[in-house]
Image 1 (tube, chains in turn yellow, red):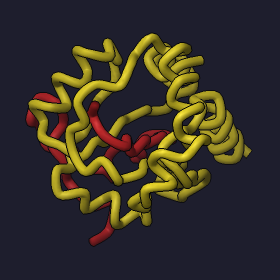
Image 2 (cartoon, each protein chain N blue to C red):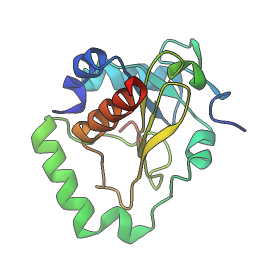
Image 3 (cartoon, rainbow over the protein chains, first blue to last red):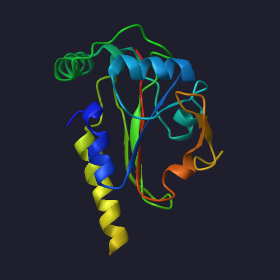
Length: 136
Length: 36
């Protein structure tokens, strides 16, 4: 499963999947058009929520190390989306979090380097776990 | 600042309170590295 194919699967699981990026709403809209991702993209130009979630800024090795380069090539081959002009802080790393209904944090992943991305399957598994726990 | 009370604009400029995303069910939030 790739991110742009994930919305239906999250919808079936009764969950929301939302992206947050470090730029303006207009740039978020352009990102959606470019990637053809049919997901809400929130704009956090100040990166306040990145800081709140403890997401790191990478050093040079974490940006350009072998792990990052290999992961980037693999991602491009899988998704067909190649990296273009970077908008935002190039050193900012991402992450992924799953919240159960009511706000309990049930999954967290903070990227260790530029190529350290989350697989949507892992997010979906966390969502399923949160739903199952709620049903008892 | 509490995450749940944080409000961010979406791609259309509409304000979204993050806590509302998990009010009715689970929510997965993905912070992107960048838009490039």
